[in-house]
Image (cartoon, rainbow, N blue to C red; front, side):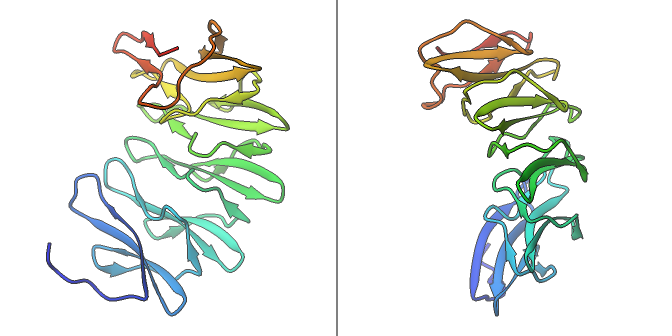
Length: 226
């Protein structure tokens, strides 16, 4: 709004809160990084995550990934979480009401999801951008890998094994009421949609570009392009 802020050596990502009233951004001075919220600097860090900072959908909380020496941690409203060897890119996710937070972290060869500070079962990999909360924030789903197999984890339970999980805007889709969950997968050359753990009819393709996606309507019915 025409008001000049403090100057830094580098300015990183700018992020407005959903209601547009607050601004947060990453900044560097003298080799140290800070997150600036409403013009006020936070604590210094050795590095910040590529997508830092992010706001909760309700605009009440702000979080980011930060490096402390050789370790990384998620910082929420100035409070530092447990430190890990890595915080996976594009995994930091708030529930719609902003009350819950999940992300994927790594220690050694293991990759696992951390939900509200609690570590879940380890996997070989967590698919980038796949963490998704249901509308009421109670359910969480994400895609993971063990060896060459790909599968979706819903409420902590591993689903069927596939050759691949297809990527839309959201890898996993919950119905509006949160009771149903769907995703698209591949086995060999065939594609199909998995709904509530049950594989649907096989198709030659289920497009993942051009705006195509899996959609639930208000009556919990499912629609997709194939």
